[in-house]
Structure formats: C-alpha cells, structure tokens
Image (cartoon, rainbow, N blue to C red):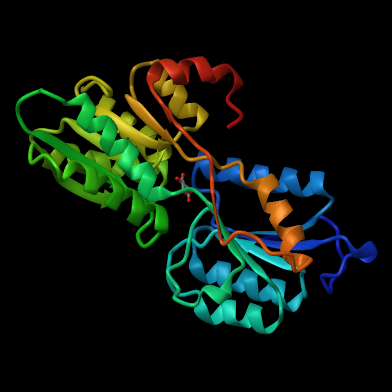
Length: 307
Ligand code: GZL
C-alpha cells in the first residue's frame, strides 16, 4: 500500500522540500514496526515529504514501489531490500532517472556499487558472532554435546544469511556444538512457533534455540511451553533484535541472551537523504551502533525501552 504525507503528484514538493520515497519490507515483526515508526517520525521532524510503501515481505511489491517513486520523480529513494539479490534492473532505472538510492537495514549482493549511494544498517555477521560468543562462554568447561536448533530469518535475506554465518563461524571451533536442525521462520511469531513445534517433535534432545529475531523466539517460547518444557531453562534461548516483548520474556527467565539490532535509523536516514540530494559525499557504509543484553540488563532497560 502506498501512502504519502503531502507532496504533489510529480513528486516535487512546492517550496523545495525534499521528497523521499521509502519502500519498506513489511510489518512482519516488532523490529520492523519500530523501524517504520522511526522513519515516519524522523521525516516529520526533518520536514521531509515521505512517500511510504509496505511490501508485505514481497520483492515484487518493493520493485513496484520503487518504479512508482521513479515515475513520481521523487528526490531520493530509500529501501530495505527484503532479499539480497534481484535488484539491478530496477536500481539501474533509478540511476537512469538520476534519483539517488539509499539502502537501509538490509544490503544487496549486486556487484555494481554505483546502484546506491550508501548502506546504513547493522553488521549482521557481527550480530551472529555475538550470539555464538555468548553460547561458547555459556558452555565453557561443561562436558557433553550441545544440540542446537536454529530459526532462520527470511530465506535469501542479508540478516538470515549473515546471522547464520557469523554464528557458525564461532561455534565451529568446538565440535560439541551441533546444529541438529535449521529452518526459516520468516522472522514472524506464527512461523517461529510452527517450526519450533516441528523441531520439538523431530528432535529427541534440544539444548539451545538460536533465533534470528525475537518475534520467532517469542513464537517458539509458546511452542516450548505447550510441549511442557521450560524456555530459558530446559531449552536455553539466544535471540536477536532486543524488542520490548523479548525483554519482558528475559525478565521472566525465558530468553537467556539478546543481541540488539537497532531499528532507530530514521534520523540518520533523513540526514543522508538531504546530503545525497545536494550531491554531497557520504560514507559508503554506515554501521548502526548496538549492543547485547543479559536478562539483568534487559530487566533494567524495560521501563525506558522505546520499542
Ligand atoms: C534486521 C531486520 C530484521 C529484523 C527482523 O535489520 O532486517 O528484519 O531482525 C525484521 O525482526 O523482520
């Protein structure tokens, strides 16, 4: 669905206000809705006219939205590519229309780096490594195998690919860590619950769940409890994002470690949009600042958590 806050049909706002076309992935998770809110609020604050589209996690919808922004002759296009590949054609159309493109949140795997001005987002490999490092420390000196099940993010997406590889790189150092099952839960609670139910049926022994985002972890917690097991105790859980609902679960001992993925990119995006519109040089890669949370830290952060 396309909505816009003001702005005439040809994309040029009277009075020279910057018009930004933003093609969002969807509304699949708490992280995503926080990211959307951050972009919308930042646009208002920055006096940027925002044309916003929600692709319901479908690449063809994002491509349609980008084409529509090109037709409307917006000043700048920004988007979070739902998957890494398949963007060259539409981004070449934006380039030929002399509309600069900013990648936010997720990256693309195109060789042609002239297709976008900059990529603002987290380092997902780093996030996967942080999850792996926690697990290694958690099982330091404890004998016996550690059976891990993994709920992967959206197939083909940068966060799913990179959180998987970062984690695998760290645990490969010790053969006691075994990923006995790994499947996509598409970053949603519903799918995370469904896949965890299947894992619980198929796997005789599960020690750890590594979820690529909190929404899948929260869905999995429901499945674990319905199977009569205690999440956080019988099955330890390490997750990514750091959304409020996960912090609540941590305060209840149901998630043992959460690697933050900061969705609040709105203000930086508006600054970057103004710079690229004015032809100013911007850094090619801007990494999001983010940390990690233990249950104690999450409990303390809960009262002031923005998302
Ligand atoms: C990560 C972002 C991911 C979140 C999920 O930057 O792309 O997509 O981790 C969201 O919650 O669905």
